[in-house]
Length: 159
Image 1 (cartoon, rainbow, N blue to C red):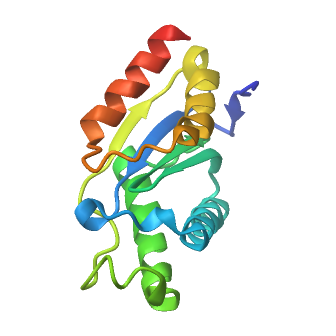
Image 2 (image 1 turned 180 degrees about the vertical axis):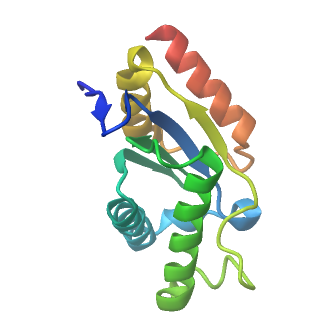
């Protein structure tokens, strides 16, 4: 994967970000394929609307990884807010029946998120991790974010 420098009238640069979001109560809502498809499509729609790119999306049963590029006009916090807020609103308004037995109230995502900026040297590696990491189908009942991030760090150090 070759990442080009983004040029605008006043700047030249590269912005790559690895994000991880977790559903409220760490429920396994992404076991359902339709939920994964809808969430993916809403992420991509919001990225198009706000003019940044999502180059990879990977789902676990209870979390989602995103590799975002060309997001220079936003802070990581604002980017997370734009993505989580839009997906939450669209899923609750239009597809609540898909996950109502797992989530309740107006929550779709947990309050926090993981983010790490990624330089060009690691961009290909992180993109590959996001695309391939969920193939292993983690089925442990207590899969925590720290454990997932440890696996990412181990993966990055091997590659």
